[in-house]
Amino acid sequence: MRRTSAWGVAAGVVLLWAGVAAAQEIGTGIRWEAGRPLRWSDFRGRVDPGAGPRAAALTSASVSLGYELEVRTGRRCELEVTRIETAAEFHPEQSWVRDGARTDAILEHEQGHFDLAEVFRAVLEREASALVGRVQRCAGRADPAAVEAEVGEQMARIRQGVFDELERVQARYDAETAHGTLPDAQRAWTARIREALRRGAW
Image (cartoon, rainbow, N blue to C red; front, side, top):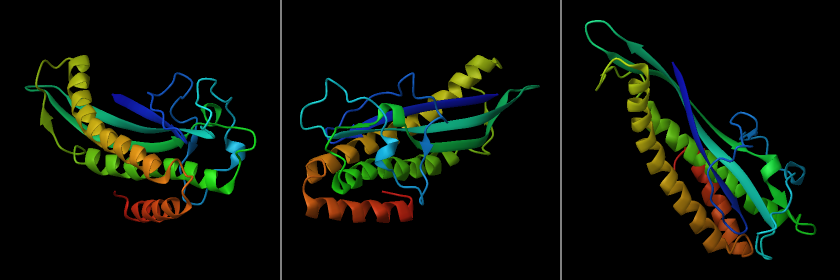
């Protein structure tokens, strides 16, 4: 039995948060890679007409968590998460930039949002890995749907804690850099994010 759950964030010069949109299918975006920074050609979406006039660009990124679950029945029901997989992805069709806003400074800021998604992907993977290989008694009946819901609740608690912290950090990033318009603050945050990427932790 395999179960995948995911959530996403949309972050830009004006920070917006949303769940993964229907068009954001997990595995179809640009997966975060250290040697593959964002380029303006990656931003292919149409400018959101509801975005404020000061919003120069928007980065749509998602962090996903998938897991494989083994259920053994017999004299008693046991479950075991045998594997997890996480990913941070950038979604080109939902990400946009205004004409005249394709500057290095704005792209550095948008890269920071995507990099933060990767930092917290690593945090999520570390925390969810604690469930891998741990055999547990099924709390309820040996019903696949009930067992799946039980594990889903455990994953959701881990996911929500990580996501709440990611949301706080993303909002602070925008506030302290004034959405990338304060060069000194942006440089400081870029250095901090690079160090977090190196450590895989915030």
